[in-house]
Image: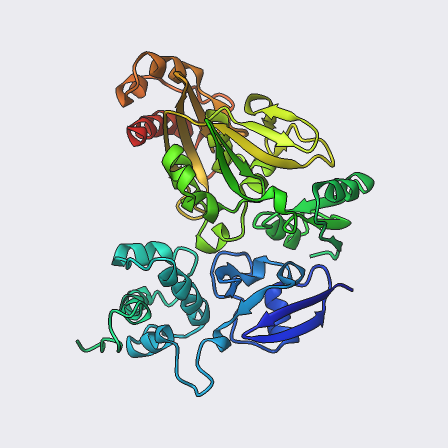
Length: 167
Length: 264
């Protein structure tokens, strides 16, 4: 069986997989990192989004063997060791950017990649377009967009603290 | 998904050797089309030959009046490349419109071109830009490359290495997306290169094709008005629950007008 060595959330793992094992299966079933979800399993819903070498990808549409040698970040790898949330996680909490929560890990991972790649700042329309690959079946998009708009100010250092949802 | 052997060669020669020795082995680039097909068990390759470790298949370079895009270059890199944005702006915008950001971070131009899905974007650009498809064995003109639904001139075991594009004067692209799948229902790419105009239509038929009547009209007069009264015949076009062949034929004219306006 093929062997895969990859770094997940800063920790190196060497795992035996089948050729057909998906990256999301490796994460959830071998490494027990179940924060990454499988929604549609057809690369449409985005619940499985993780970062591979700094880019957001759908881990249901990537083989584990294709991640050999890669740096992977999952939702579990965002908060600081002391539990301090990533600004995007904090914004999702502050702006109540979730209802059932199923899409949330993928939304947060996509949102972080989107914000990082657009240091000039994103308009509401650009945020909505940037979320094309993530579906929220509660249809809770409005607060998700507000959370991302607030988080980008902190991530790019334009504000030291998150604007409160009451502002 | 059925299981398969997995190979990750580091040179084109090694990849071709594995593919030639085993007719049931398949190359995998970004996998954004192949992996969903494998999940549905539409395909049962004995082995996948991962092309991602072959450095010479990647990257974009401009050499005088020619832009060469490596087959393994991702949509995200085509979309953000300064040379492509400056020289072939409609191609950069097209790349930015494929799938979603996560698909664009994995999917590759060469994978899409080799697959020749009738509803894919790139084949229209490649055909309208009169690109040359460079394989490990030969050079193929775009006019000879796209042969039918999911069918190209590539022979078994032959690998697309790069896409060479002569730098055009003007390019424009417009498409009508299927509102659910977001794939192309009908798209038109227009390009003027060295004074020659080429118009390629994707999504509407079983394979990308050129609209020669529009090419003549745009050669005489480069403006949306020039194509406004040219009707595409619905004969041979796709008709399905999303749109009839007549509807797609109508869209060819509408998208051609928008594509010329997009080109400016």
